[in-house]
Length: 196
Image (cartoon, rainbow, N blue to C red):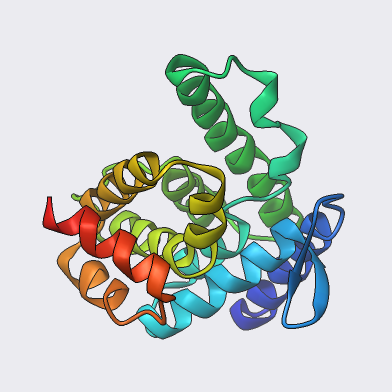
C-alpha cells in the first residue's frame, strides 16, 4: 500500500471508529456523531492553517479525539485533580487506539511512535509539529466550541479558559484566531481575554 493509500485507509478507519459515538451534534442541518464531526473539523482546519503538514500531523489531527466518549469526564472527580487525571488517561487511550489502527493499516513503528508522541502533546512550544497540532486544536475550539462552552459557564470562567487557550498558541496561531468568523458575543469574550 502506497503512503497516500495508507493515509486514506487510516482516515477511513479513524472515521469508522468515531462514527460509533452515541453523542450527536447538528451542523448545517445535518446530524453527525460528535467525534466524527470534530475529526473532520480538525482535518479541515489543519489543511487551511498548515497546508504542507506532514503525514504524521495529518494522521494525528484526524484521530485527536478517537473514541473519546469511552472515557467520560464524569468518571473522574469533578475538580482540577480529576480533570488532569482524565486528560492524562485520554492521551494514553487515544495513542493506544490510534496505534492499533495504524498498525492494521501497515504503518511502521516510526510513524506510530510519532503519532503517539503528538497525541500525548509532548514538547509543546518546543516541537514544531506538537505546536502546530495545538494551534489547530485551539482554532477548532475557538471557531466551533467557544460559543456553546460560554453558554454553559460564567463569563469569568469563559475568559479564564480563553486566556489559557491563548497562552498555548503560537503567534501564528493567535493571528489566525483573530481572523476567525466570531459572533459578536464570542468576539467580545476573546477581546476581553487577550487584553488582560
